Amino acid sequence: DQQVKQNSPSLSVQEGRISILNCDYTNSMFDYFLWYKKYPAEGPTFLISISSIKDKNEDGRFTVFLNKSAKHLSLHIVPSQPGDSAVYFCAARAGGFKTIFGAGTRLFVKA
Amino acid sequence: DAGVIQSPRHEVTEMGQEVTLRCKPISGHDYLFWYRQTMMRGLELLIYFNNNVPIDDSGMPEDRFSAKMPNASFSTLKIQPSEPRDSAVYFCASSSTGTGGPYEQYFGPGTRLTVT
Image (cartoon, rainbow over all chains, first blue to last red; front, side):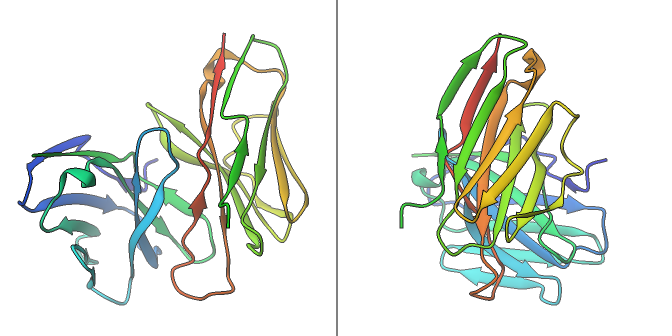
């Protein structure tokens, strides 16, 4: 029962272009969504979040969009840089602190 | 701050042996989480604590797994007896309700467990 789905295992993008990572969820009770980035041999690190009462949150090159009716969110990285190459996890909470993570999408940014 | 500290970083053991993974959360954080990452299942929440008390252990796969948090600065995840299918990377994370906001989690570097 995957409540948070990242259907693309990997994504390859040219440096300077936009990277779009997608995430779908099934639980309408989720009230907070977060994106984490993970480099090899390290733990995930928090990147950006969005509350369910908003539809967009922006932080520098990173923007997260939330479409509640479609139960879909996306992370946009503009412009993409080689250092952005990592695994990106979408995560969601339904009140409290229990966090459900997606399987992750590996992003390759080519120089 | 040193961040979340996990030990050991790598553990290789034989099937049937007891394995203990250790975690020191960030000082002042009141939530602690244990996760397991595998290729098949991604990042799974095993158990989490609030103020040293277990809140939700529904992700613990079976009775062979147990976790304790005897004080605010230390937690253990024990597997006894270990099996090859327990091979994975185990992450500890901590979080604080004191700062408001998204209550993001801070992860340790993980322990890579290999059971042969």
